[in-house]
Length: 281
Ligand code: AG3
Image (cartoon, rainbow, N blue to C red; front, side, top):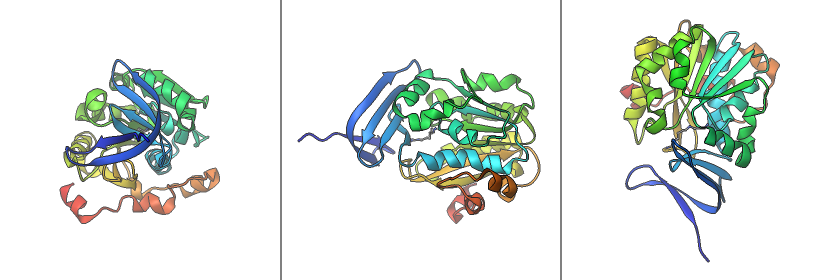
């Protein structure tokens, strides 16, 4: 009986392998190749250029941690900008903050949006909320003339090459800082500390150039289907306390979100770093 397996290679000699039931969609956009797989263990999986973007089974970790941590750290957030996030998972989580005035999501590749809505509606549904204004365009250009418009900016990108390369440099982070209001917070997915520390460090160091070295930190979350299983998020804040020590408990209790990963203890604990990571920061 034939067996079909997919491997995301992490290096030339190791990777992560799924046995697949079928391929639901394969599409080449002008920017990247997209595949949607049906797997045995992780449900539906979206790949971009052969790299796992999310799986049905563990996407909740990534999307909760990239959205709720900055939102509960920000004081009285009203307007949120998502750059990337074309699958809709981040928009889905941000939408749970029903008091927000606006959620703007700038995604460069509409093929991602279309396939997510069709094949992975459990994340694609993020665009159903009427507050979410989806703009198909280049986030790098978009932020350039947005001065002080957002409380929180979330950068939900692919790895730092190809279409996302420009989302990891200091000029971009500088424009993001200017797009934030006072007390505003940015979060960016920032890779991992095992296979490609230099990618994480590029994100952290460039964010420090824009926000100041005492206004950038990283936090981590356990995501089994991403390289190393532990994912890093870089967080920068314009002013005020460290976001680890800012958590709006009253708002958290009032919203009463039924989340699966993020909670008040995780908000703090996610910033606790192993010594070998502290050392390289
Ligand atoms: N953003 C991509 C995370 C990078 C994963 N990298 C990898 N598999 N090599 C996730 C998009 C989900 N909204």
